Length: 546
Image 1 (spheres, rainbow, N blue to C red):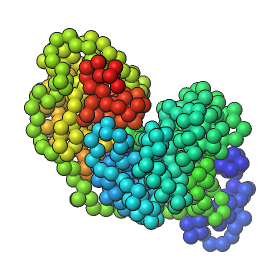
Image 2 (image 1 turned 180 degrees about the vertical axis):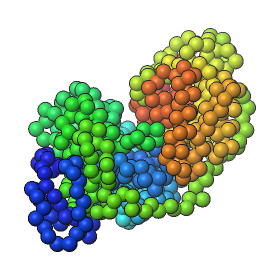
Image 3 (image 1 turned 30 degrees about the horizontal axis):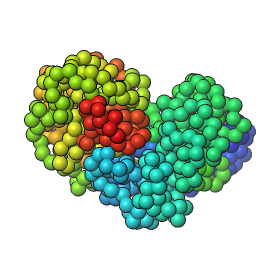
Image 4 (image 1 turned 90 degrees about the vertical axis):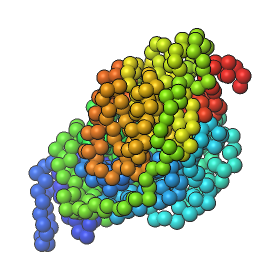
């Protein structure tokens, strides 16, 4: 596949010292001694490049991630390790860099820009990345970017610390990645003028059009593969600023595919196959300034995969620098120092009751979810409270600070959970403890099991308990992807059996405490209005006093 001209031709190539030497049409005309591999008229595609992703979202280390991603045709990735950074600071970033070093998958690194996610006191953070940390990390070989600037409110309000971080990145000529789900007009212009060059958040044709006109690179992830977006992209005269990325790949999906599955889905929805492949090969190579990757062309790394179909894009074989995947070796770095530390392991049941709410009919602030994505709304409505829980289609959401385990309990509507409780220490981005449930006894059992495990995820139905320990910081695991996926599948199944209606419940639960995710989320301090960066409490009068 020629991703530059977007054509397919029958031909041959010669690999020497890990690089393409000849790439020619027609029959083989080279006579020098060589191992000959007949691909039998299958398709040879350049290895895929993921220009925006988080290894930790697959709950495994870089080496375990590389084992599976390479199998699916992904050969390079720009990782933004802001999950580990939010718990361990600069040491967490260095761990992820070292963990990805010398693997047969090229890990490049974006320095997390917003650790904590925001500095406006809407939650209790666990770590900080300061301008001097960014300066230190720029000296490491794999660092090529500043990670997504999620605190767009901070940019608009000229937050001094954030602007210093941006200045360090610009001084070292780093790419600066963006995250701006709601910005448009003059606010978007100010955000871009700060040096930010991309956005990967949920999008629509109007948003794509404005961002392109203002020079941004658009990263399309699975949730943005709508028919209207694909039709709009197809009409563009220049698609060089359009890429497909994964961002976060849940481990249960990762077992069966990575970028190849997102591209296959794009093709199924009408994205022309050659253009879709270009959006994960030559375009991210140019965007990330990786001149040795992105195409099957003389002088570039002989890193490619072979497939029988341009529809499902399942690799028959993968070659990394000319070596077949089966012959490659993966490094296993040590990580003993990154065990999770929690303030205690025992809770009282009343800690899961709605914070500062007495029983009776009360007018409360209630976060409302939908069953499709992570966007939430807020209503103020009368709620019948009995024994610290609301009567009706509500669940209590408790967020406890990871170290002190002090927290706040608020109310979520329309989630559908009818029984049991879910607890997790993997909760973007501060990774404080999130517990969701309908009864205090179940919530107490779930979170105490979680802490005994050293972190991870737990679901307790009231009778049955299933857990997924994550041995590094309660965030990622050194176990194989297949092992973690099997455990998470059990948790997902039990959550669905509890009545939860959301199509991606684990993803939704993992961002329930993300204090920059539209529009209302939970923290250990209260309900967070993420657009205004303010904390609301449970009684509805609070919102009128701001």
